[in-house]
Length: 177
Image (cartoon, one colour):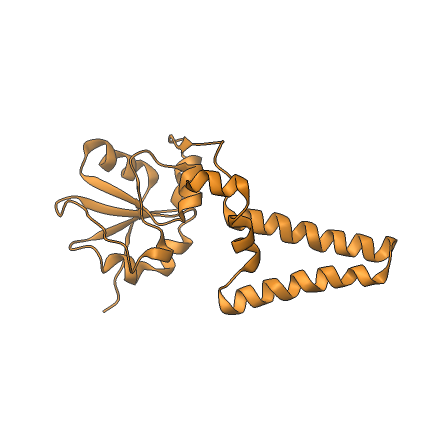
């Protein structure tokens, strides 16, 4: 049996939240949730879903959200299986919520999401390797190759050494303490 998540517009979700008939479950990672989220949402990262214990009033509608709706769409079977009745999804995720002009709690002091930090670091290292390869010595192209190999390894195995290293940085440790 294939489970489905029924799509709700941002305004429909807002109405259900305002009347107290729904619970919003945000499946983004905790660092994404810390940076910005919809007020009252529960954080239940998809990466920890099998270990998570979703506690929701059985009479309430459960509405799932992520950044754009891609994660909820890709995991609809896993998500809907945790709900006794119908399950819903915020159509377009947080991006649609923000586009509709609805309020979001934002913490500008929270560090950037770890994957954005990886993208910035990897992109900067590749760019530096190419520039130094042309301007200083061709051996610097090896830096770009090393980063490319690391990203390929991360994509194949699901283990990102750069993300693990960045999580140890002081600005990221302070947020989780």
